[in-house]
Length: 185
Image 1 (cartoon, helix red, strand yellow):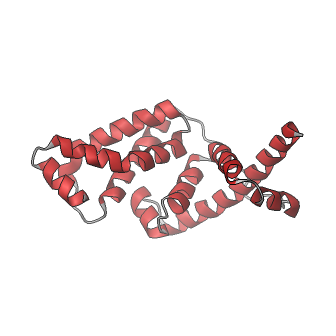
Image 2: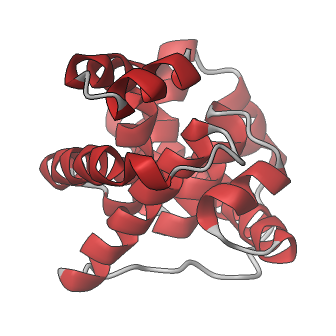
Image 3: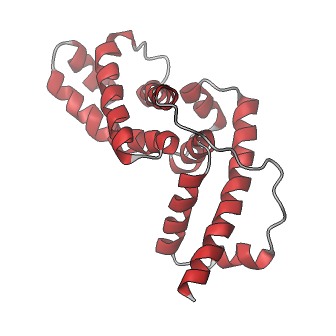
């Protein structure tokens, strides 16, 4: 479908770009939110990314999937926006303390809606790179190699970030769960 749309867009059919937008807007927004963590800024990034993709579509060679090419634009625009607006990123500890098993098991027993809430809250608190890697790896189900194509990062760097992201997510989930439990009881 992407090749068909791209061919029509390059032939002057700008309406065909609507199909591209419809198909990729949700994941692109999610990637921008991973980095920026602000809805209105993520929407700005999404809009500018689609404009860039439309303007530069003739440079798309088809070597990789269109989604890989487009998501790389979104990721680059997100980090460029963060740098331009001096968004402060906070990195968490590299060697976390041990998490008591009762907290880890409690998180697993939560209802699905509660799990989504806690995971979204935790994703807001981890660094943009870690949040981005988790979304690409788990939500978009990309391989390490695909993530490398989309981000331009090395395989070893991705593995390190993914490892740290899992640790930090677990730490934050445990902390958020404890805080919410105190409020509820």
